Length: 249
Image 1 (cartoon, rainbow, N blue to C red):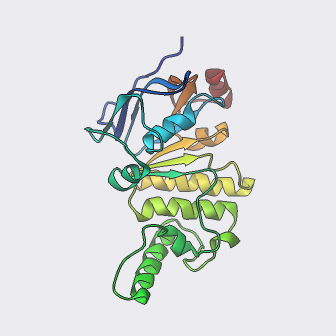
Image 2 (image 1 turned 30 degrees about the horizontal axis):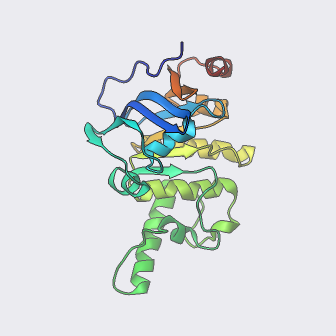
Image 3 (image 1 turned 45 degrees about the vertical axis):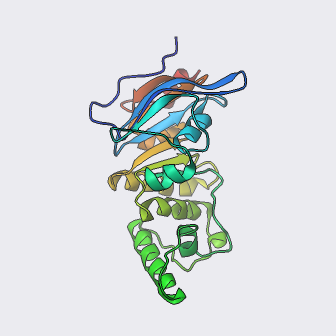
């Protein structure tokens, strides 16, 4: 029988999820999910379409509220009532498959979109944002410049910009939804390297992907969703794609 929990890390988790439930009419999209998300780990999330992955993430990011269950962030019970609370109070950044970037604006303007620096004088503010953007881009080891227009960048480079926001605003938990689904094969390695850089910087990453080989390349553990539950959480030790497919189906 599918279970909703598994053996978890012994240390205090960054985020502890307990018995989370979310229903939409007669459909129980998330059905009593419990999961400990460790600080500084890359946790892969897999499951067939309709397994509950997207709804689960919507509860962590404040786009939906759970019907029951609890969330404990760094040992403190929390209610994620809105995306603003998730982002600004708890430091949870969601990077969607369809990147929420403004293609006609520069990289620096996109990095600060909605969270612009306020200071006396427009040129002073722009200079501060440009300098901070340049520092983050150097940290990401990319050739992208703050003045580049986002719409002129490749798909992989736009992923870099989206990830840059998580570093710029010191997010603790970065959720990435299918980051390698819409980019060229040669850029996949770059994105996976960025995931490793986030972990090296002490960030926690939830990585949702149908590309199982990508998860095997970077994840520390892999959670398998099934009909709104977590069937199992598997340490990424000696796993193969066939093991993940078997766990899903």
